[in-house]
Structure formats: structure tokens, C-alpha cells
Picture 1: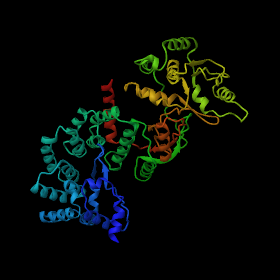
Picture 2: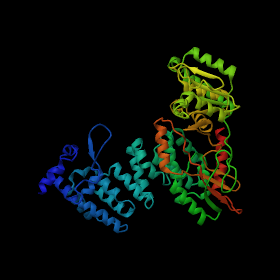
Picture 3: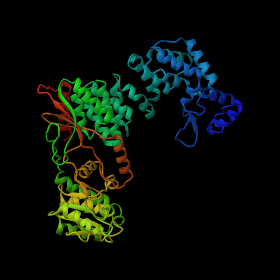
Picture 4: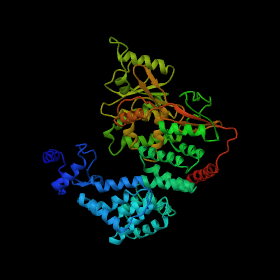
Length: 557
């Protein structure tokens, strides 16, 4: 009966098992261990990512009864030491039950000893009596013992550098641990000599620079990260800042100051924790209220303060954006891919005669989204009514393609591009040439175009997009951009920390954005309003950080 059960289950075992010569006895021992659940609840094998060859992961160790009992013992007991004979016996039992994990046994056992520095040291001593530990084993030893046995960890680290020092894999592996020791500046040099920055290494360096109050190094690392990291990675770094605050590495007012470095809204859990702490423990805070800020008036509903208004981009920057858009996006290597020289000249003459404008309308985008007033109505009439209602008395330009006649009822100039030309780029050009106060009505985020702009100017393009893009939501609502930044701000009375209203909503928003669909921005207007006490005094860390910030800004200029 049991053999039939094994044969039936063996049909579901991945083919890669056969490549590792797992015999029937080994399969039976695994199935016996999982007999209660019948199916395999854990992933046993994973692709290495380099071809089709598969390797057994260290999760296979969980199918050893001896290893499972050892881990349960670790949970029940505190830190302790084991003799050489005890380690030898444990290894023999594990290899008898799972002989195919011999190559990863040292690293796996060391990994399981997290939080047990004495036990980790005793195991490393045992390994050294038999053979030289590999890089993975030493890495887990560093993680387990860096706090208690820092001198020994750094001694082993120096030995490893002789063999692996120039290896990027080695630096990324041990960097996060060494960055939390007194030799953390060595890791900083690795970061500045690398083309990319490992997340674990960069977050550890940020933590150590804040802990040591070396804020100049913090800015150097932060600048390096922001230059080459994606939006997702920057969000992860912001999450680490919250963890640093939770761990007590930085005071609360310095944490709020660091949130000003970017648009870093807190999620629901973080908002709840910060609110509770400010209400009950932070003596410098009078009150903590979850509230809203009105998008146009910029007034907080709780404290009635007005948030600072977003400053429009400088006219000189707008002129540079016009040049880059023409050169990089429109003309490029071959002007005939996006337009024609004749059409570009016609547009320049048109803008010189008719411009500048207050609003630019993406004609095709609006036509695809607008719904008729009724079954007997037409889109043309609906578009005319919307434009007359929202933009009456303003200078409006419609940019569309030559085959689109849905805009003909609109009073005002219309620029039509060839059906093979890029109307998006002409929309951007018209807005840039009209100046920093011009708005664009479109549900297109121009992400595919902005991604091609040079890194130096890309932040200005993204700022323009956030400040000057109007969204349309059927049947008849226009959503104007907020007149304040969705970032942490400080006023005389306190702080306003942006909060994500719903994590699931943000996931849907990002999915639609990445899929380049028409969408309406669902940015939350929720803020955590933190009121200062009249006796509030900035922490010494914050005072020093602001001094270094001023120095850093002078250095950049």
C-alpha cells in the first residue's frame, strides 16, 4: 500500500530530482516525513536562473528529522555551545537522511544559528578543525556574531579579503554586515567604486552613518542611491528609514526631516505606529491627527494651516526642456521616425503666431475617454461643453491627428499632426514653449518619452508632469493637480506627513501605470498632522543634520 502511494506521488516529483540521483529510499524518507499533508508544502527545488539546470535549495534540509529537531531545540533554548563530537554526530544524522545536501550543509547549519553567537562560534571552530569554511558559511557567521564578537569577525573578514576582496559577489554578500561594524567606511569605498549599489549594503551604510552622526557621508550615499535606483528601490530605502526610527537609531524629529528628501508617504501600519507614539510617548508633540489637506486651497482640515505651494519650474529650465525634447525625442537619430522637418517647421511657426497657451488638450486621448451625453448625443458636443465649462476665457490649444474631427466644435486653434507622427511629443513641446504656468489635459503619463530624457533633466520632466497634468474621469470630471507636494512638510505649528490611504489602491494604480492604460490618479490626500508643543526644542541630531545640509547644498552649487 505504501509503495503504491510512493509511486503515485513520485509522478509529481520534478524531473530535476532524477538529475540529482535521488533513489527510492530517499524519496520514501521524504514522503514519510510529509505523510500527514500528503502534498509537499515547501518548495524543494528552484531554478538557478542560469539555464534550465536545477539545484536543490537549502529548504531540502527541512526534510531531515534530525535537522528539524535541532531547529526546535534552538527555539526552546538560549545561546549555548556544542562540542566537536556533538557537531559530528548531528552532521552524520542529517547526511544519513539527506545525503544530497552535503555541499550546503555547513552554510545551512550556520544560517540556522541566527541570534546564537556562542553556538555559531563553536560551529565555526569545529569546521576549521576539518576544512576551510566557504564564503557563504563565513557570511552567516559574520551576521550571527558581528555584534558580540566584532574583533573576531573583522579578523576573519581581513583573511577573506585576501581571497575574495575584489569580487563584487563577496562585497555584496558581506557588505551589509561589515557596514554595521567599526570598519564600515571600507564598505563605503566599495559603494563608490561600483556601477550599481546593492540594497542591503546601501541601507546598512545609511544606518551606520546616521548612528555615527556622519551626515555628510549620509548625503554622499543617499545621492549615489538616488542617481541609479528605481522608484521601487527608493521606496524600500524609505521603509528602512522607518525601521531605523523604530530601532531608536534616529530621533523622531530627524526622521520627519529625512522624509522631506522625497515623496515618501507612510503606509497604514507605519502611520498607525507613528501616530500612537506621538500621542503617548513623544513629549514634543501636542497632538497627532489623521486628516486631509484640500488640494487647491492647501488648507489642513485639522490645524487650519496652509501648506507651502509648489513653486513652478524656472523659465530657463523650461527652455532647456524644449531643446532636449526636440533634440532627444523628436529629431533623434532620424527625424522621420516621429515627424518630418516640414511638420516641425510648421509647428514652430504656429507657436510663434498663436502661442503661448494656458491649456493644451490631448485631442485623441480625450476623444477615446469621453462618453456621449446620451445615446442620441455625440462626443463632439460633449467635448465642447466640457471645454467651455472648465476653460472658458482661457487660451486653449488642441493637439490631435489629421484624421480626428471630434474637436472641430471647440473654439480656438487646433494643431493637427500627420497620422504617423507622434502627437504626444508635440503636446509636450507646446506646453514647454507656453511656459511653466501651462496645463496639459491628458490621461497619458508620457512615461515612455520621459524615460528617454537625460538623467540630469529627468527630475524636472517628472516634476512638470506632477504639477501640470489634468486628468479626466468619465463622465464629466476633471482632476486638477494638487498645488502642494505630496511630501512631508514642516510649518511653525508642526508637521504634515503624507499617508497612503489604501495599499491595495496604490498597487492597482501602479499596475495601471506600468501597463500604460488610461487612468485617473488616485493619490491619497490623507496626512498625519503632528502639532508641536510651544516648548518644542529640536534635538541635537536634527540641529547638526541641518547644519550639514546647508554645507552639502553649498558644495553642490
